[in-house]
Image (cartoon, rainbow, N blue to C red; front, side, top):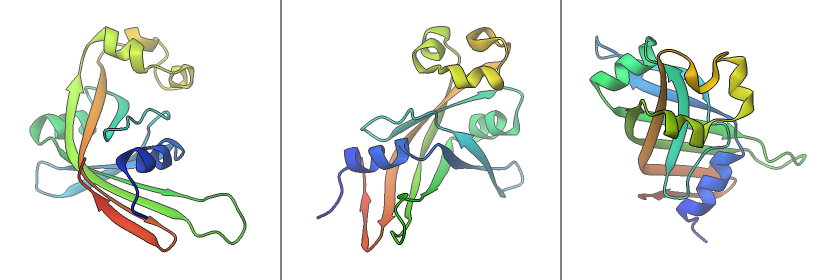
Length: 143
């Protein structure tokens, strides 16, 4: 039975680290690990924090088309892993209320001043297309 976006969002939520890919100024593709902090909405939105001085933020500002890739183990011996690849548009949010709504205590390790960290941005990625491979079950969803 094909998975719904809600099913895939649950899978994505259980995989902490995502590879976020952006387009570089010279046309290349840059990828870096980002924690989603278990913040994945049922409609395909994923949320990440960064600083506006990073290549990540600059590249998104120049071209909001991004990719997300995730790989997770099901935790049971002999069970196949799960893979998710999503493409969509990223948005840079600089709103303190939005920071507070998506903040988790673990982020204090990376942003010592919390939601008051100078240059903090919240990256919202809305997936336009999601592919998943879960054992022999695979499919594509367009949220």
